[in-house]
Image (cartoon, rainbow, N blue to C red):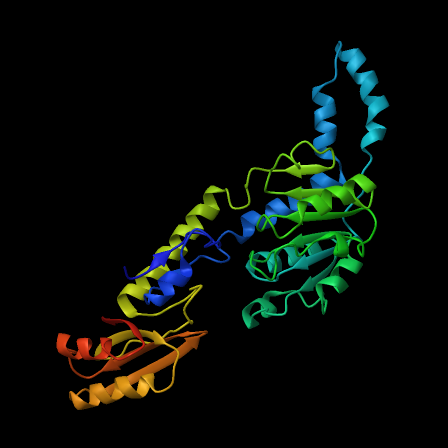
Length: 337
């Protein structure tokens, strides 16, 4: 196995740690479904603030002739008075491709927007509107927000990120949206806050028996990236990344390997994955020198416990040389391209 591609952002169904020990990069497609998820988040905010689902259910259950229905509509519509988005504050936790897109669009709709992401990339920072306020902590963001949307992966650090303690610090009648991963928001704590009147609504992509029939909850069947456009974007992105890796050894959007790009020059390319320990490049270079290979270009990057070296040499690398490099303690995989 040379690589694994996931046509989406989540890789929870892939044994990433095992693949890393085998020197196999796992690719995903961050941002390819950003517009689809952004549109659903905005839809969720509008569904919540205008009580659309509750009003629709009421309208479907009206009985009698048209004249009777028309009269009843005028009586019941006061039960579904909502509020508008402009002037309200949206808190965005996680400013990757999706979070950045949500933040910018919400600002364009007239909302105040606060963002939090201690690991925001330079690329996303450039894309984020300068009008987006930055929060130093999750708690600071929650205290300012009328709406909160989460766009972070589920891990030990983000499990139950939104919980009873943090909900207690939020504005009264706030709305929480989760189109990221089940488990980031503690559903039991949210339901308790809805029942007490602390929260106004909860919109998420993860139905459960606890949530699906609650009058202040709207659950959707994991529709975040379910558009034809998003599926095509993800497929194209993964295909392009895998092609570049297989043909050139370059790595982009891997969840377990560093990003590496080396322009092709005349020569013969090698791609080497290894444990991130001292003197690996030195040992590789020594073997190449001993066997008469001159290095034309080289790049070495590391990520956690794994490192990746991409290099071009002036002569064909034989199977014998490849085997010698493979036998270096800590080398995980070697490819000639």
